[in-house]
Image (cartoon, rainbow over all chains, first blue to last red; front, side, top):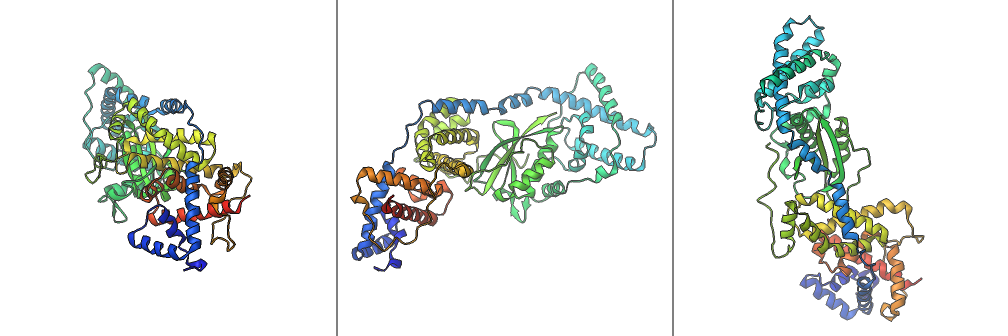
Length: 320
Length: 199
């Protein structure tokens, strides 16, 4: 036991900390009784450990707690967004109801319109089918006139059935409904027929995501509930996504998360925030997918702490 | 929606004996800012020590410690109590500190070369540490700690300075128990060799 290779240095270190099992400790005791060098090492480690513990650390700055408080106050940006979602909920519901009326009227008038290009017909029918599906299952408020800004987004997400019914919007007062109905109907008629290529431009990742949502809730045979269910570290980056249809966007995010083996959860108490909790190894992929969907604020290199298998990326949804 | 399950998972284990912060955490989760400030007051000194022992740079420590508590505040809602608050908090602190050290690696202030991993100590009889004068020991130790990798300084800080058990260190660093034991032994051997060798 006195040869260099036989000195149980790791055990002696743990012996010092009283972190050995009884049998290991007895073995080290026997070795120490015979090995002067290890006894000397043990004595040195004791001195060293004491010295490390006694090493001076600068005093805590007296105002550090206050500075931390100020930084927390400054970083509490989501609260205004919460109000933004809560306060105008009734307004959004009213607009949504008006929008629905506008769409219905637009559909009724559509056959009277001049015959469009064949591809436009195909696209228009597809669009109508989608629009019929979603409100029929969940008459959630939608701001339909914003569809012309990103019509292709609905191509991807409209067929997805909603996960839970959303309360019907409050009926609008008749005069306001008429006024806004005209406005929205006019907007709907003004929608240009999207090129067929754009209709086919289905994001591959999103397609997988949609498929994932329709699945039995597993990725690669592993139930989603166990993926990144416990330990994760936040990226410390709050991304922003301006959306016209929150519900579809939520499904979008969940699809992205599931496609990389992760999940989506609400971020309490911030109703406008969602978090994608994904495997660390798939973070770059997730970020790329988010960027492709128009999520902003992700330009910096994200370097979450090591030691966590999963990473949380928050996205703040802002209604157009 | 179906995938937004409530956070109160029935599988969560909670040990009320060890988590003295439970009440403050609950209040802070409910939006009680004063409760969070109290949590900061309770944990700030220890977090400060640990982060400093990893970084060994006062200004960097100030920055990182602030980031730690901002992160804690932001993530507190998702803290389920599976681990002690202090463990969870120190995990954030150490990983933040190590990340910071990694980012700062290219603008290292130190001129010394980092130490290589220790093998077996030299066959010649080293200077017994207990024979060194306290002042000389402190000086050598400070010099050598500067040259030890931050990840090893972290394990030394948690064990020797904060007297954490291996199990808690494993939880803080996200390492297996055996890895903690071997890393600590290697760090100590490295430090011992450096200090004994002298300037």
